[in-house]
Amino acid sequence: MQVSATPLEGLLVIETKLWRDARGAFVETYHQERYREAGIGATFVQDNFSWSHANVLRGLHYQLSRPQGKLVMVVEGRVFDVAVDIRAGSPTFGQWHGVELSAENGRQLYIPSGYAHGFCVLSERAGFMYRCTDYYIPSDERGIRWNDPQLAIDWPAVNPVVSQKDQAYKTLAEMQLELPQWIAA
Image 1 (tube, helix red, strand yellow):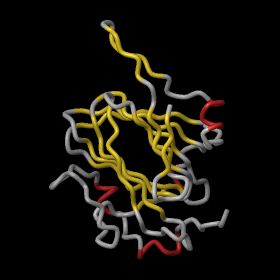
Image 2: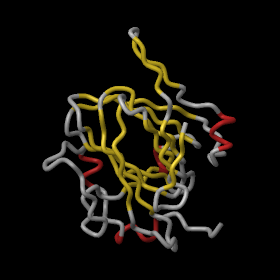
Image 3: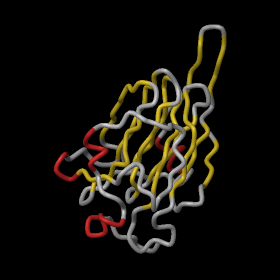
Image 4: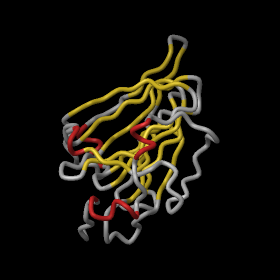
């Protein structure tokens, strides 16, 4: 695997090795020792999987008191995946980074805790896998509006399908009292 840093602290793009032959393909989705050597020392405690249809946009989600780091990948289809630095006081606060993840490219994104996360489906259907560093706690879930003008995320969908819950989230500026704090390394 090859790991590349992004402009946002701790946010990493992982290029996995896909082995293809006439039977199909194989990919190693996680190997604790190799990921630790690459700087991802997180302990993962929960795996999630979602299927979504074309043009579905999920996010931007985070947990406040029990933040989750995430290792995400697509096992079917294609998505535009986005992480937003919402750590109050961070030098890159309010900045986002997006990357296309697909079953074909085998790319993963490691999103450290303190980031909001979302994705938009680019294919007819997408199967999305999340490996999380903490458990999902419904009462701890928060979100930032996907179309917050301050963030100005360049989503690839003009009229995405967004859940009522995600549509009701506030902007980053309105969430100032419910954001994780940045701690200098």
